[in-house]
Image (cartoon, rainbow, N blue to C red; front, side):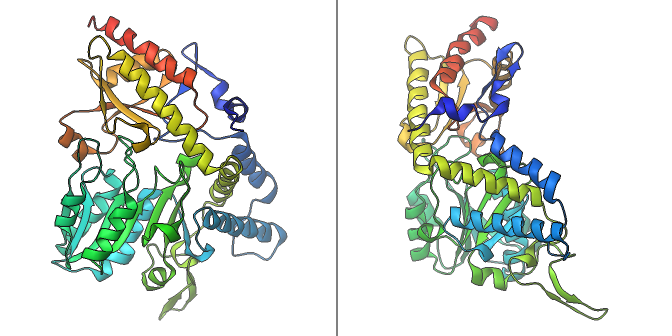
Length: 413
């Protein structure tokens, strides 16, 4: 039985007040809050097991190494992968740069094509743009429809034998639109069989069940901090044969097998990509987050968030009953989006709305959400984003909706 009240008791920060009001945290697409189980796992690591990994033979070093590799195994199981296919990084941005520098840069040449979309986070655009500057690679941007969903016909028109990489998000961080990944993968394999597919799962992996075997992509990236884990923890998954072919991204300690004054050889995968002292506590915390998510169940989480989103969309619709108060972006149906509603209050800048809501203890995000090209497409300078996780409640949605009229009063609209 999904018990949100019991779940909320695990999150210490949800008990605090902001500006004299109970905290209503609706900025989960930026980062999630952390349950005490994750916090305690990090504290336990530093209090009882802290040592560098893969270096020492003393007890603490053995414990730390075991915890680090156990964390890798838990991450792998969570997404249906094998432990040696999991590379620990700081975040999705680093993972995407790793692919750009270690896979694309040595293999691509002038005239090769990368396909991405205009809805992408800047992290899924800028690493590929770097390749245009260094190699003369061409980037083709796929358009989106009114629901901020990739247009299949436009994608198909961009695909041909010259395409070497397709980089897409499973879910829009701005509008929450769940993209048809299965259809996209099938189309890419048919039209551009040599292309590798990179899936940005930053906003999907924390909210819905993910199985890399069923996705059919070549690379998957996601950030730990968006799924209850600590900041500075992230994951690149890639097919083992690709990792074996890739050059190291960073060079230094532990990613080598041997070094002489004349030459060097690399460590085996995945260690080849984890130079220097890793974020062991981050990996341990991420593993604890995964245990927490598994205990609740990803299917249950997705169902709850979809129901909450449907409730919120209905409340926004009520606001517009007599006159248009808010403009909402993305799909009209909750089943087509996951836990994110971006909107603007008519006549008021998004930053002003966010500041007024903050005065009532409501935390939302305002701005471009690192999606400049999408904002240009929508012809808006910014938007307010309310993003939910499974510890949010209908009462918090009500609080958000009830305070929007206060924005209108302040601006005398």
